[in-house]
Amino acid sequence: MLNNFAENLSPGNVSNLVEIVKVTKIYPPDVVALRNVSLRARKGELIFLTGPSGAGKTTLLKLLCRQEMATKGLIEIEGKDLSALGDNDIQKLRQRIGVAYQDFKLLPRLSVSQNVAMAMEVRFMNPLDIKERVAELLAKLGLSEKHHKPAGKLSRGEQQRVAIARAAAGSPLLLLADEPTGNLDSATTALVMNLFKELNESGSTIIIATHDESIYQGTSHKKFELRQGELYQV
Amino acid sequence: MKFLVFMFMQTGRNIRHSWGVQLMTLLTVTLSVLIFSFFFLIYTNMVQAGLKLGEGLRLTVYLTAQLNPAEQEEFKKKITDFGRVEKIIFITPAEAFARLGRQLGNDKDVLDDLNPAFLPYSAEIYPHKDIKTLTRIKEFSDFLKNLPGTMKVQYGQGWVERFGHFVRLLRFIVIISGTLLILTTMFMVSYTLRLTLYARQQELKVLRYLGATNSYIKGPVLIEGFTLGLFGSGLGLGALFFLYQWVKNHFGATGFMNIFEFSFLPVSNTAMILFSSIMLCTLGSILSIRRLLKI
Image (spheres, rainbow over the protein chains, first blue to last red):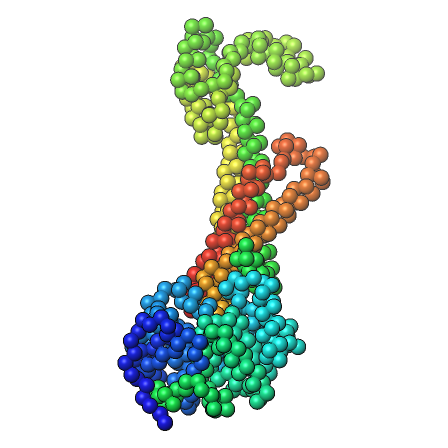
């Protein structure tokens, strides 16, 4: 059963990692991508965001990592209003958010390990720790053999896993995954979901936008559905 | 420390990915520095030669009549009122005649039947080094010409003027090549790095999405600019030194090299060229990234 989730939420509660209050996003000239959307994600929560193509899932994720700005409403992460953040604060926030993009956003000429390492390099993590973490993630996602291969030479399914590994690399506070299993078979989907589960258990809040019912059916995690820019809790 | 390690790693990665363009820029910087420092080297040597020649510069004032001691003092006073002089020597016709004889050497017998009195009384004036520029010497000469009792003033003006014009032309070339160096270095470095940054725009975008700060992106570009300046000017100066050594080895024993004691640029000038190139290239790299950080 679908319920309208545009209930009144009070911002500023720090136990909530993400607070989205009555957010509307209109792309010029007048394309309404999100309408009056409110959502709350507590620390360590895993949330599924479903809905048909063009419903606004990607837009919502883009708003959360400040790739886009909301036209109306409030978005807070850890009690900080994203619209009020300066350039440097946005970058610091992005360092703590892992995003697995639907279009991967990999650098094709760099190797798989270099792509994954980038997420940690921008945080100036210890090079040895980076190396270790890259190897660990690639092993978990079945990509150990592809370590040195340029990302541009991988299949779409492999590229998707590299993008997920990069998103997970810095053990982010918030992980946003946009259709993370769209190009994967059931075996590799299981690998990806195991990784998400591990991260979630270690405290990361995860929001997964997906079409793939198999990954959220039967789970006890919160599920929301976006339909024509409006959000409903399932 | 970690910051620096990442900066150098990223710089190395950038240079590897755009080595062709970077090499062209490096060669342009090298060539610009070589052209500028070549003219600067000639200019500094000419200035040195001019100073050296100037040390022996004297103006000879031919007098209409002999000056008695009181008149000599009056003459000296008028001259020192105009400007400082190293010394003033009064020469009698007999002394001038004897000097002429010495200068003629084995041919001095041509003077045998001549009376020394045909030579005029004269005064040799050795100006102080603050009257060594061409303009000041001409002013000084004009002043001496107008002194009462002066018949004629001689100081090899034709040669001094030609030399002065030559040094002025060199100075002009140095200024032009220096300006060209500044423009080419800054614009070439700026545009090359901007070109490589445009080619890397997707990468920069991804880096920004991953949370790369401005310093993380700017740092390697600044290091690239610094490196281009350092190696470009180093190679340019190295090539000039090689050229200087070659000329010295092949022409050192003959011609003008002996007259002018041709020497390489002093350490201070070399350091100044190196430092300026590094600064210009770094400035060029700053200009290239300003617009690309707003993702």
